Length: 340
Image (tube, helix red, strand yellow):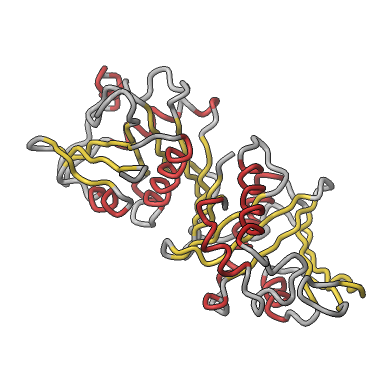
């Protein structure tokens, strides 16, 4: 399974081994983890074992738990998690590197994940626990609308030499819970949604300022049908972004003889956003997510073609593409997914 969530300031992406060093920095911080039951990690091998377990969960079609890296401006600053209890409830957890605390990031990340859990998993009860002395954590819970429902003796944090009191907070949810503006959910496109590819293919056609859009029938041309015809083979991958449950954008790759074709081992990109969702950073996150997926699949590079006048050229460079050729109107760009 693949899932990412973009909020106004943050991106939540599946955590795993690529985040080993950055995860270990906060997971081994004894001051930052003093109120936690399973941290600090004493060695980087402990952190690697946790990330390997998270990777294994994300490899499942339906994970038992959802562990995310939290990124701000592309920097890994912490983690947020959801553990469904099998009874309609879901337990939230979070941790941030010390230098990123006090900025509302934990609340923003946890709210976005809780919203997804309610809308997509049907979670009816969100809950979380913390040490009674961990005021920063229970303030986050209160900001999320949770109420304290119980306390119990006998909590033993990993680095503690005595028991403490554990607080339980919860909130019952409905379809309006945890509503957040300007949040996009990015996930794999389902086979029953492949028909949407043609809609986004039309949206992907670059139309210079002042030029009349072409008729929709243009996507039936053979040179454009190569992007979508018989989609679903082993080398075909697609992600869809939605905002408030409505399709907002799509990125897909396949090995095809398109404008950006390099060779028969290199997938080519197509990306499309509805106009009203442009300029929000959604396209950048979709591209970064797809590049991560292609790396994990073992591809060495990816390619695309883009018209020189297209504003997206800058975005492609930002995520790692470089110009390797082209003609009077278009650039051919390549992103190297493995080190030379």
